[in-house]
Image (cartoon, rainbow, N blue to C red; front, top):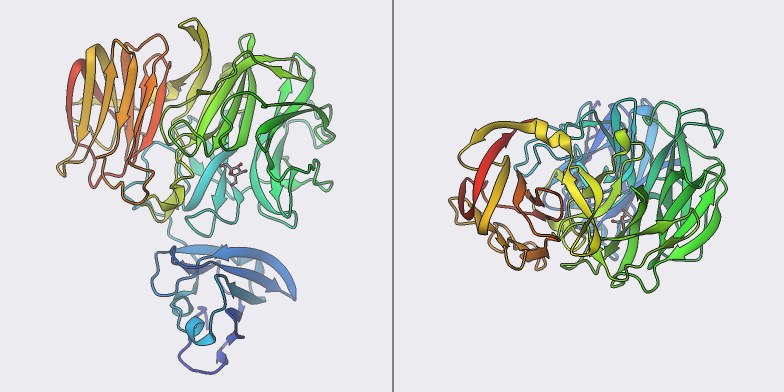
Length: 559
Ligand code: FRU
């Protein structure tokens, strides 16, 4: 029998169908014996059910452990479990359902047993309405933070927090995509998979030009959090330019007593002549230094008395821009409009201590859907190119997509500017986005850019034939830019979704650049002095525009 086809048609505790045998051993525990015959085992998922843990056992050894919401009475989508490497071998899928004791009669009736099947292929065709046209999104499955971003030999590498076995957060793995232009992305093989030390949480990569770690000249060295019983830091290296990684045998390389101890960002500090690492520990950032990337010396902490502390600090970044240093500090919850957001501090850094006179939070983006922002290591011309995860932990698991969930922001170049007697970090859409501009069109489409030159108090409404709309407004006197998505379409899936966001543009705004892509709207002051990123889920795309106080030009964006 070629296909794995499990049936529960008989009431026997053990059923035999050629090679497969299914054992219902009580208490929500099921064991399936089968031979690996094809590339994938396709698992049916139902998102509103309890999860199950599946241990894949080969020759009496656990070779994989994953958590999946196996379908009980409806299949939302399938996810592929790659079993090719076990071709021809007998496997045991040892399945335990969560969510309290389940009777054998209940479990036997689950739909999954008739739907699970082996297959040579898995369909990743893009058929979802909200799949972005020019933003990065995973081929399938859940995505959160961008990880390990670096540039080498003409290629941008983006790793990301990925669940290969469902479109909600689980099974954290580093997925991988590459791009030559920051807008067209090619999916690559998963880069770093969970292991005995834990799931693979967020982190960073460096290109070790001078072989300080001893893994080879130009080895790509990844730093990530092993999320096991504790959160500890681990490293892995790649000698094929970031395609495949070997985990360092001396992991973990850094431990701590903090419960939240994660997201290492490593960079080479030219001024200091050493490597620095910054990572999040509770509500502060810890800074370390190293000569060899393996042994790290604690230098200092930053955080107490600075910025917003209404949540856990996560995903830091630290970089020199001109003669100042920018410390990026993502926080969740406690963001400017609730949930997740990115705050920053401008200051000085001598390789040991970050100091800032800025005591209150400033936000990198004043929308609701811009989180876990970090920058590429080694970007050309010393550009500080940032990407964010375009979602918010308040509702990220519930947004109305299925086969994939979440995308990244457009790439942005960060810079520091002065206005109103203060210093700010600005974000400009990266120049690569200009190349997407196609024909000038009269009405907006699902993938377009609107350039609005401000002439007075401005109001721009984007709407569709279902009376759904978003409204963007700018008040010249107060310099306040607003974005209202309360009537934008489907806002029902979370009480935190319907919202109006606003920002006072430092120095005021002369023009706006508005990027629309299927389920997102990013509004930039054209000089990058302020930006708002918000998701929208309209029943149909916004095809009409009305505006007052500005002159608009709409460009179709084509990849
Ligand atoms: C931020 C975060 C990180 C963590 C990762 C886990 O969104 O919570 O702190 O490493 O997600 O997926």
